[in-house]
Image 1: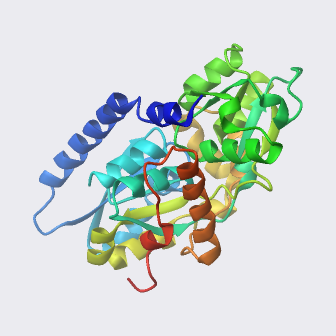
Image 2: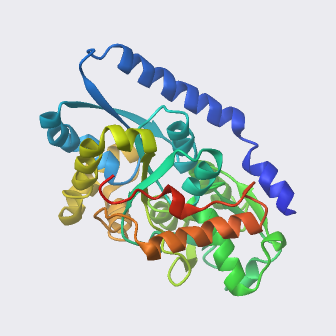
Length: 323
């Protein structure tokens, strides 16, 4: 598929994402209008899986921010790209996403700000193929149809995996599907492979018997980034710092308890979630030169492929110490 076609496909779900964004805006606007005039609010965007949802479930963030006079509101998003769109639209103040979504978000809005990241977790994303199928190496993906979530962390992972195997990106057929739809397509054989992240990766291994063809090891760090806006960071720095400090503090040493707590909301059995959680890393730190350089490589790769409309300078969007 030509690069221009890929770029067009990245925007083809604009209507669906607009609906998600409008719904989030409506919920959050209602909350803000009904807050007390003197009340400070931090609006968190989260996905169904990850450390932010653990903070929500345990009420840990509310406890941490109450002495600072803040109330917390939460909005759930199905993946990183629509969450980043909501951040750019001013619907949330803080959210998290993998490597790729912030790149596209920064290209759309220079107000985006990287405020921290979790350590690398390369085993947390992989390409699944049929257990007894003919695909034995990444090179065998040439000419094959691959399901993935457009603009997500696995999008970059797939590009890197193909690149290392000497397969041009244009030599495969990406099929852009959300995780649930990707799982269904892979299970019925409508696609040859599925590039996916945990916990859907762990669930797919168990439910379909899929085999990991390659994970991110040696290819991509698979970091989780925390993002805000310049305006929010400037006005609410102490609250932002307190929020980042709270992330991962409880989850790191309580994997089984975390899995049991997440299972009902995620809809994945606790034993499978435990597998996924053990591939995670915890603790938020500011971006350093290495992390920033890794993100710049993501941006440069997408621009080279024609998937990014203009060059992006990642360093320009990194929060400076003390700001």
